[in-house]
Amino acid sequence: MYRGSLLENAEHRRLILEAVRAGVSPRQAFLKLGYHRNSFANWVLALRRGKYPDGTPVTAETLERIAEFMEQMAQAMAEGEQRLVEIINDAAGRKNEKTGLVDWQPAKFLLTHGPYRERWYMHQPQEIDVRVHGVEAEFREVRNLTESELVEGLDDPDWAQALLPRVVTEG
Image 1 (cartoon, rainbow, N blue to C red):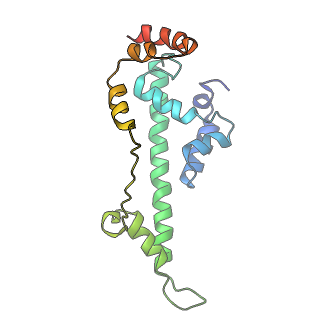
Image 2 (cartoon, rainbow, N blue to C red; image 1 turned 120 degrees about the horizontal axis):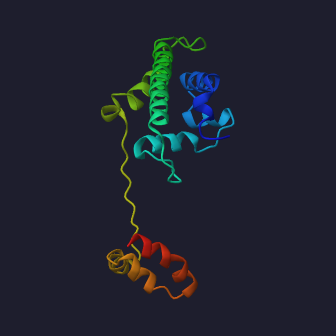
Image 3 (tube, rainbow, N blue to C red; image 1 turned 90 degrees about the vertical axis):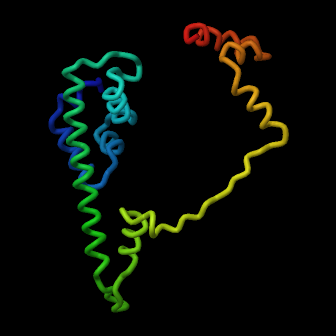
Protein backbone atom coordinates (compact mmCIF):
# COMPACT_ATOMS: atom_id res chain seq x y z
CA MET A 1 0.00 0.00 0.00
CA TYR A 2 1.14 3.52 -0.59
CA ARG A 3 1.34 6.22 2.07
CA GLY A 4 -1.82 8.12 1.24
CA SER A 5 -4.12 5.13 0.91
CA LEU A 6 -5.53 5.29 4.43
CA LEU A 7 -6.11 9.02 4.16
CA GLU A 8 -8.09 8.39 0.98
CA ASN A 9 -10.07 5.42 2.33
CA ALA A 10 -12.87 6.66 4.61
CA GLU A 11 -14.10 3.12 5.28
CA HIS A 12 -10.67 2.01 6.56
CA ARG A 13 -10.45 5.08 8.79
CA ARG A 14 -13.90 4.29 10.18
CA LEU A 15 -12.94 0.66 10.83
CA ILE A 16 -9.72 1.67 12.59
CA LEU A 17 -11.55 4.14 14.82
CA GLU A 18 -14.20 1.55 15.58
CA ALA A 19 -11.54 -1.01 16.59
CA VAL A 20 -9.75 1.54 18.79
CA ARG A 21 -13.04 2.39 20.52
CA ALA A 22 -13.40 -1.34 21.23
CA GLY A 23 -10.00 -1.39 22.96
CA VAL A 24 -7.66 -2.44 20.14
CA SER A 25 -4.34 -0.55 19.98
CA PRO A 26 -3.93 1.80 17.00
CA ARG A 27 -1.03 -0.28 15.69
CA GLN A 28 -3.09 -3.48 15.80
CA ALA A 29 -6.02 -1.73 14.13
CA PHE A 30 -3.71 -0.64 11.28
CA LEU A 31 -2.31 -4.17 10.99
CA LYS A 32 -5.77 -5.74 10.93
CA LEU A 33 -6.54 -3.83 7.73
CA GLY A 34 -3.26 -4.79 6.09
CA TYR A 35 -1.27 -1.62 6.66
CA HIS A 36 2.42 -1.85 7.51
CA ARG A 37 3.24 -2.44 11.18
CA ASN A 38 4.99 0.94 11.39
CA SER A 39 2.27 2.99 9.69
CA PHE A 40 0.83 4.47 12.87
CA ALA A 41 4.27 5.31 14.30
CA ASN A 42 5.31 6.83 10.96
CA TRP A 43 2.29 9.12 11.03
CA VAL A 44 3.10 10.24 14.56
CA LEU A 45 6.68 10.98 13.45
CA ALA A 46 5.41 12.78 10.35
CA LEU A 47 3.29 15.06 12.54
CA ARG A 48 6.19 15.82 14.88
CA ARG A 49 8.88 16.33 12.25
CA GLY A 50 7.02 17.34 9.10
CA LYS A 51 8.64 14.51 7.16
CA TYR A 52 8.41 10.75 6.92
CA PRO A 53 11.12 8.58 8.52
CA ASP A 54 12.85 8.24 5.13
CA GLY A 55 13.18 12.04 4.98
CA THR A 56 10.43 12.66 2.42
CA PRO A 57 8.66 15.92 3.32
CA VAL A 58 4.96 15.77 4.17
CA THR A 59 2.76 18.30 2.39
CA ALA A 60 0.79 20.77 4.50
CA GLU A 61 -2.48 19.25 3.25
CA THR A 62 -1.38 15.73 4.22
CA LEU A 63 -0.20 16.93 7.64
CA GLU A 64 -3.59 18.52 8.20
CA ARG A 65 -5.38 15.31 7.23
CA ILE A 66 -3.11 13.19 9.45
CA ALA A 67 -3.62 15.61 12.36
CA GLU A 68 -7.40 15.45 11.91
CA PHE A 69 -7.34 11.66 11.88
CA MET A 70 -5.06 11.57 14.94
CA GLU A 71 -7.51 13.82 16.80
CA GLN A 72 -10.27 11.36 15.92
CA MET A 73 -7.99 8.54 17.08
CA ALA A 74 -7.39 10.27 20.44
CA GLN A 75 -11.15 10.73 20.85
CA ALA A 76 -11.77 7.05 20.00
CA MET A 77 -9.14 5.97 22.52
CA ALA A 78 -10.73 8.14 25.22
CA GLU A 79 -14.17 6.71 24.45
CA GLY A 80 -12.79 3.18 24.56
CA GLU A 81 -11.07 3.80 27.87
CA GLN A 82 -14.23 5.31 29.34
CA ARG A 83 -16.26 2.28 28.24
CA LEU A 84 -13.78 -0.13 29.85
CA VAL A 85 -13.69 1.85 33.10
CA GLU A 86 -17.49 1.80 33.20
CA ILE A 87 -17.47 -1.99 32.77
CA ILE A 88 -14.99 -2.38 35.65
CA ASN A 89 -16.95 0.06 37.82
CA ASP A 90 -20.14 -1.87 37.15
CA ALA A 91 -18.45 -5.17 37.97
CA ALA A 92 -16.95 -3.77 41.19
CA GLY A 93 -20.32 -3.55 42.92
CA ARG A 94 -21.74 -6.90 41.84
CA LYS A 95 -22.06 -9.96 43.97
CA ASN A 96 -20.42 -13.14 42.81
CA GLU A 97 -23.26 -15.56 42.02
CA LYS A 98 -21.36 -18.56 43.36
CA THR A 99 -20.16 -17.07 46.65
CA GLY A 100 -22.73 -14.33 47.25
CA LEU A 101 -19.90 -11.94 48.13
CA VAL A 102 -19.20 -8.58 46.53
CA ASP A 103 -16.38 -8.95 44.00
CA TRP A 104 -13.59 -6.65 45.21
CA GLN A 105 -11.10 -7.41 42.41
CA PRO A 106 -12.42 -4.89 39.84
CA ALA A 107 -12.33 -2.16 42.51
CA LYS A 108 -8.77 -3.13 43.42
CA PHE A 109 -7.81 -2.96 39.75
CA LEU A 110 -9.16 0.58 39.45
CA LEU A 111 -7.39 1.67 42.62
CA THR A 112 -4.03 0.21 41.57
CA HIS A 113 -4.17 1.16 37.88
CA GLY A 114 -6.34 4.27 37.76
CA PRO A 115 -5.93 7.85 38.97
CA TYR A 116 -5.38 6.62 42.54
CA ARG A 117 -2.41 4.47 41.56
CA GLU A 118 0.21 6.46 43.47
CA ARG A 119 -1.58 5.81 46.76
CA TRP A 120 -2.71 2.22 46.19
CA TYR A 121 -0.18 0.50 43.94
CA MET A 122 2.36 -1.57 45.83
CA HIS A 123 5.66 -0.17 44.64
CA GLN A 124 8.47 -2.62 45.09
CA PRO A 125 11.70 -0.88 44.23
CA GLN A 126 14.30 -3.12 42.68
CA GLU A 127 17.98 -2.46 43.05
CA ILE A 128 20.05 -3.75 40.19
CA ASP A 129 23.82 -3.81 40.35
CA VAL A 130 25.19 -3.50 36.82
CA ARG A 131 28.79 -2.87 37.80
CA VAL A 132 31.39 -5.14 36.33
CA HIS A 133 34.95 -4.91 37.60
CA GLY A 134 36.95 -2.44 35.54
CA VAL A 135 34.20 -1.64 33.06
CA GLU A 136 32.90 1.52 34.76
CA ALA A 137 36.10 3.51 34.23
CA GLU A 138 36.38 2.33 30.63
CA PHE A 139 32.78 3.25 29.96
CA ARG A 140 33.29 6.78 31.34
CA GLU A 141 36.36 7.11 29.14
CA VAL A 142 34.57 5.90 26.00
CA ARG A 143 31.50 8.00 26.68
CA ASN A 144 33.60 11.17 26.40
CA LEU A 145 35.07 10.27 22.99
CA THR A 146 33.79 11.84 19.78
CA GLU A 147 32.48 9.58 17.02
CA SER A 148 35.64 10.22 14.99
CA GLU A 149 37.80 9.13 17.93
CA LEU A 150 35.68 6.00 18.34
CA VAL A 151 36.10 5.07 14.66
CA GLU A 152 39.86 5.68 14.86
CA GLY A 153 40.05 3.28 17.81
CA LEU A 154 38.46 0.37 15.93
CA ASP A 155 40.79 -2.56 15.31
CA ASP A 156 38.81 -3.80 12.31
CA PRO A 157 39.45 -1.57 9.25
CA ASP A 158 36.23 -2.81 7.56
CA TRP A 159 34.12 -1.48 10.44
CA ALA A 160 36.06 1.76 10.49
CA GLN A 161 35.53 2.17 6.72
CA ALA A 162 31.81 1.38 7.04
CA LEU A 163 31.31 3.94 9.82
CA LEU A 164 33.67 6.62 8.51
CA PRO A 165 31.30 8.13 5.87
CA ARG A 166 28.59 8.47 8.55
CA VAL A 167 30.95 10.23 10.94
CA VAL A 168 32.28 12.54 8.22
CA THR A 169 28.79 13.59 7.07
CA GLU A 170 27.52 14.10 10.63
CA GLY A 171 30.62 15.79 11.98
